[in-house]
Image 1 (cartoon, rainbow, N blue to C red):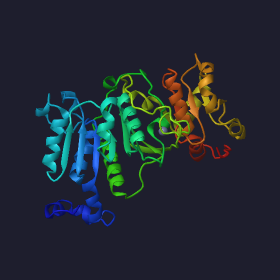
Image 2 (tube, rainbow, N blue to C red):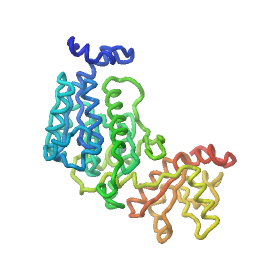
Image 3 (cartoon, helix red, strand yellow):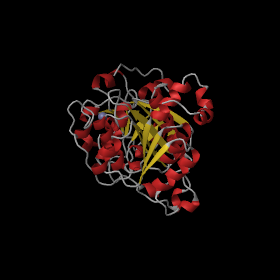
Image 4 (cartoon, helix red, strand yellow):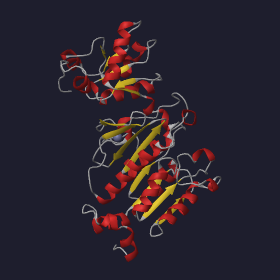
Length: 380
Ligand SMILES: [Zn+2]
């Protein structure tokens, strides 16, 4: 698929990038990207993907534009209020770039239509704010072996990760099942308008990289972003051997709709503590009143080699069965070596209905680097 003279003129700044060049731009032209949800994440992502020359861009969204969308959903104008988002998006994207094809799918993605729709695309970008849709998209992409770029936002925080079949963990490897009714709802929680812009453009960047094969995708790394401290962090994540959908013998082999739940409530209701923040809490707790519920979820032999003062050892594998031990105490703070197991521990605690679990971001490795180099860690 060669480029026309007008395309050559339009994409000149891409064509001069040696990593991309005409061959890369032609790959973008051949690419078929589905954007699920044209809200806060889907808006910036699809604007830039259209401008960048993704040949076929699908927008699936059954909602209509509401006034409260406009502070972050930059695809839409005030005059669009009341219009179907997919239709308004298509018009705007084609105005930016008439060289591409934009397909408006003005319906809600469900188990009954997901397979048929996703099959028609090469890459899926998940910009939904519904947790049920996020799991549905993940399962569909795993079953259909399609790359998926997922992101989530909540108040001032966001996270993103790419899934590529056979190359890394899927969303369920990280959070095996939906956590329902934790904390406030999406609408109540609020969101900083510029936040989804940052995450949506990270998703668009990933889509371009996956479509062209350049760079190193965000596979096996959960990227987190905190707008208030303006910090990015990365949590290494690996495939879960017993993942319900991407394991060798998965429990989920067909798509199904799950109950509606708010996407923002799940992983992001986990409190992430820096090593400095945890030390401050420990000092305060020592000075006054009841101690912290500090749970070290590493294996006993790792714990015995060295651990934080006051920490209790409950290996991750035993956590689900021993959560009752923690009932009636304050919100737990989980720690492990790298921050990966402790994040999973938070997910387990949330699933069990515990409010506001926290974990030490970067794990004890971060503690050793930032606070106390004398703490002895053995390989996990
Ligand atoms: Zn998985």
